[in-house]
Image 1 (cartoon, rainbow, N blue to C red):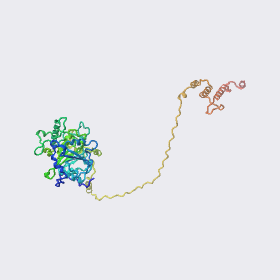
Image 2 (image 1 turned 30 degrees about the vertical axis):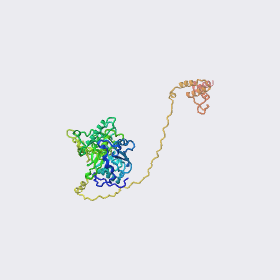
Image 3 (image 1 turned 120 degrees about the vertical axis):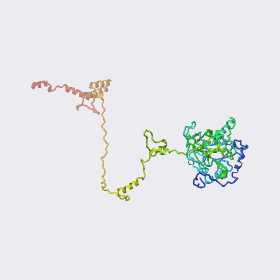
Image 4 (image 1 turned 135 degrees about the vertical axis):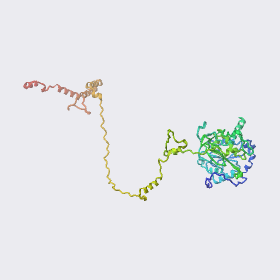
Length: 529
């Protein structure tokens, strides 16, 4: 939380300060030139008392610092011990806490700075301190900080975007792990990297790698030969999950995204150096768009370590490492181009294209004039036709008066309401179940049925006999005539079935009077006989 309310964001301008801090606060900067001058590739004196001191801040919830989890800058911190005096600043930023600090490194702070902290940083930079800021994708909106308020004083600001690789990057699979092979804007960086690589190869496999800066001339600028003017793109670096920068003079861009990363040819590394003759002080500011370049995982990738050494050598007190003037005046930087928001455009109505063709059948417009293919006059919600409608009153001779509300008149009254009566929706009866018939039993002859019954009742037991008589009577159609005994299930017993068959046989054997051909007494006598 800020101690004071911040004023509105100022425009990109250089703030020339005339007030100087107390001399004892930055007393370590005065004697910084007495060390073994690692800016020239020399060795550090015994005890490293005169080596430049580097403070890594850890008071603003920095995303990257030597003690951060998930990698962090541990390896870089140990690597700096050979030429610098690195330490961690965990307290608040103030004039007292910055005393004795030569280079202050901010690893993507995630908290806002107060006005007092900004004033302390400005005074410290004006007195000769060097600030090295690392950013992250999304800029200060993603991190939740207000560091652009300070950087804009020196012509630099971090954009709220992300760098994305357009072409495949070989060993780097994620599109935001951007490999840049043509992004060096100042040949001083290339010369430094080449000299560091030469020094490392000349030291042998058993020696310690030593980064050396280019030699300086009398005017403190790097000497460049004619053959090195076209060698600004011989080194490559990886800037994972980085953001681009806006750079205005007197700041100078030194690294860009190149042509294979979008946004194309936009700065990702910039420096600012104060000119005490113009009242700007002797401090320096450097901004790098990707904090993961110094991460343990990415420090040894490509030329990341050598590029970081370049920034530290440049920021060291009384460093003679200078930028190439011609590249500083005319950096190869492109215009910032915004990509369309595809997700938002997909929700809008589709635009109509007029496929205008020429006489030979080809499209009459070129790719540069593709905007003329859009027709925005087919649909519209505007008031362009109202003047024409008002002019019709004069042409038709109709008096124009303001519109009034017409009260509605109901000529046909509302019909009376009648109760709605509906017949009951009764459930229909289910269909009758179909009877099951044994087709073999229905169509077979009685003789076959009796043969099958005889085979089933061939045991000769009394039960088989009774069963045979009962089923046989049923098959032959023997029914009771009222005098036979009937069981509980409605069927005749075996005795009743035999009795019914016997009665039927007697009836058939007994002759009737109609069966004789005689007449009169002779017929009666024969009957009695």
